Image (cartoon, rainbow, N blue to C red):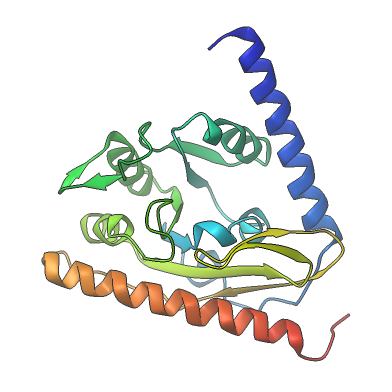
Amino acid sequence: MHSGSGQSVALAGRALHAYLNLVRRTTRFKPTIPGACPWERSREPFIALTWRGQRMLSLAALAGSPPIAILTSGQSDGTAMASAVERAGFRTIRGPGRQNRPVVHAGRPAPAFFEMRKALRDGTSIVLPADTPEVPCLAGTCAVQLARVSGRPIYLFAAVTSARFNLDEQDRASIALPFGRGCIVWSEPLYVRKAADEGEIELIAMDIADRLDDLHASAYQSLLRKRWV
């Protein structure tokens, strides 16, 4: 990487971290239900998922968590995000460098998959998007396969704010804005059998997509209710 390019990435990472921190500090979050966060329920590492287009408040959702590693894109546009995540105090795992290659493709895991599995074995939880840029709002099988081989539970979460700019209806992407009201909702744990075959994995992935949609709908509905202090 050229020094000029490295400086640009560092600057972009600082700017992104500063903006995410501004959104977090100026958003009035609805109190989370006690015991709802995965680390409040159990000490075991977990796998957390949300939609790629709805992940801007992920760092707020993970506040107070034990060691976390967040999967970021291996593409050049993911470098700034990785910098922002690391500035927030979280570890990063870089995904595949090629845009069209997911973490698991044609049954062959990329190196990032093995790194995530090792992190779980070492006691670090994993956060990754449920979908890919190529197939938005369709839960992939990577997290399900990761849960199967590691024995760790999957938790879904929705972190939303009333102040936002909606970008794309297809993948429901939005940019969180400061000075709004926020809501963070976690699901119940989902375990995957080690003996699960390809068909069962696909069914679980489809169920995850439906659950994530329901979870986000519930979080947005919560923002419409009576204001909280």
